[in-house]
Structures are given as structure tokens and as C-alpha cells.
Image 1 (cartoon, rainbow, N blue to C red):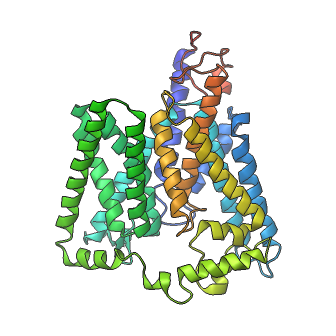
Image 2 (cartoon, helix red, strand yellow):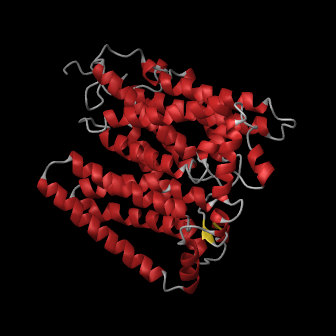
Image 3 (cartoon, one colour):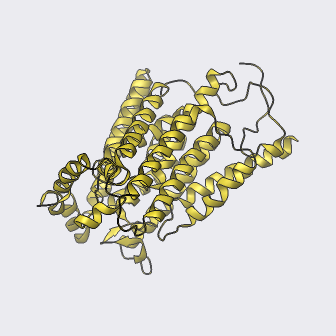
Length: 426
């Protein structure tokens, strides 16, 4: 029986790892990720996926957000491909709920998730960098002269790489010195992938997220020696990154593109009916349309999408959708922060996902994030940790994620549950 549970545990982690790995390969749609998850979620549900009361707020808010989209669709004279768009929104909502439920049952998949995410980040970054520098046959992994890796858009490719970079950074500054270089190398590859995406949003997201994470680590660890170590490593890391960028800027095409993209405000941002003008117009329009104007209709009217997830929620999901999105984000961040510094085995993963979600929330003011697969993965990770904390408080798990409550049902009904031996001591 123990061997059977162990085998089931390995299969479960492999299934989740493959899902996260596929999330980094979305060059074409429908991507393999959608097809795989469409099969994995019902199969896991069939073998014992449980929706706990602790993730009910996430479920209700995602449901009401999508109801807002359905109501907004009713005001449209022509539907276009709106039903498919809303189906994707609902699918992504299911994916966040799925990850949260799985993490609650199996805390050990958190490490699997981040390792798979880091692996996907290294692979897609390597392809994007190689394509950017003109390696024959790899120009497929660039767009607009910018690295995209195995993504359609460099502005999604770049932000996708930030959470795994935060994870590797955490491992570098908190792990043993002997493993530092082993973790620093993939971190450098991923950060260079972000740089060569030439996405201003990704650059800002990385800088802000790293600053927040290092600040939280300094706040959490009271040891003077540890704080000095973080500061020294941070300075060394910035120096190494700066040197790498200086070397890259010696290439004329890199220098030219960098000088263009490094401008804070582009012509399409500040010009007449540019990004910011459209934001002002859209928020005024939202005040007159409680149900919104229909998903994606804003872009059809003005020729450009909202490039602001809050405005997109108002336009495509109405006041109900906007309220649901706002409450969901605030609830996730507040509830996650309340347990952020508790001594738990999953605390590093909560820290990475919380900082990642906060950064993506800020990024949402200049870009649409509502259909980003990895955004919902971050949501699921945070709510999975919230649910784990609920189990600790209910005395069914200890701080290391080991079961201390009643013995689990037979393994064949628990494909997704914690398969480690039960432990009775607190």
C-alpha cells in the first residue's frame, strides 16, 4: 500500500509539473496547455479532487466575474467570437481553482510547480535569445525584432519569466553557498530573456518584484549576518547583470532597440487617443454602461485594446465583473500577506507567488492580464497556501505539510491527496 501511494504521488507531481511546463509553450492557440488541462482537470476530479471551504471566496469571485462577462455579452449587437473568449476566461478560472485545490491536498507539488516553471523559463529564454541573435532556423522565436521564446507576444513572454526568476533568486540568497552558482546560472539566463524581450512592463515588473522580495526577506529574517549576505549578493547580482547588459549593448541592433524601448512614454502611449487617452475615455464610458459594452468591443471601437485590466473588466465584464476582480485581487493579497511570515514549509512558495501577484496587479494598469495562464497559476498558488494554513489551524496538517488528522481514505480514491505516512504528533 505504501509503494502504491508513493507511485501515485510521483504520477501526481509529474502531471502537475507537465502542466506548468506546457504553460511556457503557447506559440499557437489552442496551445498544448489548454488541451492537456482540459483532460487533466476532469481526470483528477474523478480520482478525488476536493474543493475545500477555504477556497470558496476564490470560486465565488471567479464565477461572478465570468457571469459579468455573460451579462455584458447580452448588450452586443453582434457576438463575433465572444462566446469562445468567455469560454477561455472560464477555463482559466477553473485552472486557478484546480491549482488551489491540488496544493491544499498536496503541499509538495509547490516545489514541483516552481521547478517546472524555472525549467520552462530557461528553455523559452534560451530559444528567444538564440532567435534574437539570428541563430539559423530560430527566428520563429522572435517578433518585432524582440525575443518572444515560445510565446506569441514578447509582452507576455517577459512577465512569464519573472516568477521563476524570483524563485531562483530566493534559492540563491537563502540556500547553501555551494549551490549558489548552480542556481545563479539559470537565473541569469531567465533575466537575460526578460531583457531581450524589450518589454518595458516586464523590465519594470522584474525590478519592482525583486525589490519587494528582497525587502520582505530583510524584514522577515532578523539575523544581521543574513541581512548582510542578502545585500552583498544583491549588489553582486546587479553588477553581474549590469555587466552582461553592457556587453550586449555593444551590438548595434541591441543598443538601437534598447534606446527606443527604454523611453518611458512611447508615441502610442501619450499621443492623441493613445493608451492614456483611451483609458480616460473608457472609464467615462464605463460610468454610462453598468453592463459594459461587451468583451473585446472596446478594441473594435477604437482600434486598440484597453491595455488596462481594470478598464477591460469594466468594458467586457461590467460593474459586476469589475467589482469581482477588484475584491478577488485585494482579498488574495491581504489574505496572503496575513500568513506570509509564518514558519511553514510552503512559506518560500507563498512569498514568490504573493510578490508575483502583486507585481502583476500593478502591471495590470498598463496591460491586459486577464487571459494570462501564469496569472491564474499565481492565484491558485496563493489560495492553495491560504487553504493549507486553514488546515494547519484546523489541526489536520503540521507546519511541514504532514498530515496529523484522521487517516486518509484508500489511495485509489485519493489521486490528488498527500500520500506521505500519517503523523499523529503535532
